[in-house]
Length: 359
Ligand code: PMP
Image (cartoon, rainbow, N blue to C red; front, side):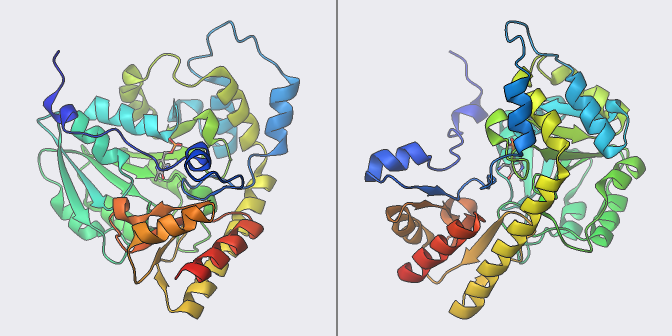
């Protein structure tokens, strides 16, 4: 059977240990999962109410265009509905962009380390991947712009970056966008946008009006607490959205997920409260690091990458035995670091206690 050579070389993408796996392996009852940057507070009560009270006819296919969700997004962002493409998670938006724009005649530029799905999808499409090392957790935007050449189709920018949490300042991003040729797509992945509190952060909506080659991706998986539903979206000018639409599967976002996401965006009080509690959690971690002589990257996401003076896998295992699943930096390109999702107040306290007992 024919399998593309580049696919044969890839391993399946493993997003970390699940609660069930750890329960089975270690016989533990209580598990705290802080490995995939999910929302410890779940989702808004309005979402639960909406789903409970408005059962749909699941015998019929979902609205492929996602009219209700699209209208909710359009109202929230004050942008016409034709500026959005919906995906089964923003993972799928990344896949759609890669399928539409990358092949073996093209290359694609990204930071390293960054969110692994950009590279994974580019490799599947046979494109050459140009990785530009981070500098102190930051994208080296100057080097990324310089890496763009006549074969470059897509440049990926992740802000706040996973796994470092570092965000990009407006002036740096604008300077970068000004250097990228208009026929090269820039993907600005803002999966953690709702957690950002930095004052120098840019306004992505203004940018998509000014740069026709920019698409901004966001998700309902993080602050909105709907990772299980798988809904993400891209925002760009309508011509760019239209050029991607043929690649999207006709019913890619399911009916229940569309309903939940539309209700979720209506509750910004919930998002504000999650953003504040997350900031408090980050500050606790930063304080802990100062007290224990540990370094970290200043995070604008709902996770923090903490550097230790020991092997991350050993630390990861030690925390696992205490029932706390975090992400070892080994697979993320930071062999002595752990990426830890900011949990609820109790979860943060338990995690810091466990780390204190371990290091
Ligand atoms: N982008 C980044 C930077 C992420 O960290 C993630 C999830 N870990 C995603 C995209 C994908 O999120 P989802 O598919 O759940 O929207």
